[in-house]
Length: 352
Image (cartoon, rainbow, N blue to C red; front, side, top):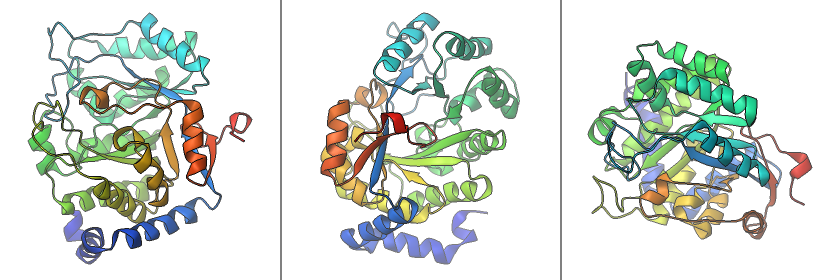
C-alpha cells in the first residue's frame, strides 16, 4: 500500500503546505521544529574526507558525471595504501571519519572490501562511514549473498555506519527512469532497516530535481519517516538538488533554485519530526544559502569536505576551510561545535 493510500489526508495537507505556504511562514515552522530538537544555539559540523575507492560503475545513472564504465581509461581502483594515505591526511587536520563510497564495480571481489575494512582498522583506525545502500544491494546480487549477511560481514570487518547515498527519490517510477540498474525503493530502505536491526546508525538523503513531482518528494519523506518510526536508526537527513551540468541525462535541464531548496529543507524538518538532525547542503548551494538554511530547519553545517569528487564532477564546486566554516556558523548567530558521525559533540575540540 502506498503512502498516499495509507494517509491521504495528511499527504494532501503536506503537499499543500509545500506548494502554497509563504516561504517565510514555512521557514518559521521548520525553525520552531529545529529548536524543539536542539534548544541550544549550537550548529555542529564534522571534519571528514570523502574517499571514492573506485569510479568504475555499471549502474549507468543518468544524473552521474563521476562514474566510468569498465575498461574506460579513466577508471581506477585505489590501493589500500593510497586509501591509508588519504586517511592519515584527514586525521592530521582533526578528521574523525571517512566517507567511503564507490561505483558498482563488477571486478572487485567481496573479500577485497572486507580486507579493506580490516586494513583500515589495523593501520589507520578511524570511523568508517561507508558503502551506500545501493552498493550493498549490488554486493548482494554480485556475490550471491543475502543482503543481511553482506551487512553483517562488512560490520564485523570494521564498517561503523552506512551513509544515505543513492537515495535520490524513493519512488520506483522515478528510480526506474533515472537509475534502473540500481537499488529500487524497497531494496534501498531494506538495507537501512537491516543496518538498524544490526545496531548500526545510518544517514538518509534525498536528491531532488530529477523530473519528479512535488508529490513524489512528499512520498519520499513519508517513507523515511515510516522507517524511522520502526527503527530509530537514522541520525540525520540531507537533501540537495541535482547538479545537471555535465551529467549524461540532464545536461540541458535547468538547476532548481534556492527557494525550492529552502522549501524542501523546511518541509523535511516538519515531516521528519522523528529524525533528530538535518544538514545544510552548502556544498551544492553555496555558503550564503547554507547559512540561510540554518533558519529553515538545519542544525548541522555538514562536513569540512576535505575531498569531494562526485558533485564537483558535475560542475559544482564549493570549498571551505576550518576557520571559515566556524566563522560562517558564528555569523549566522550560532556557536560552532565539531561532532562525530553520531552527532555527539567533541567537547575537547569544540570551538569557543
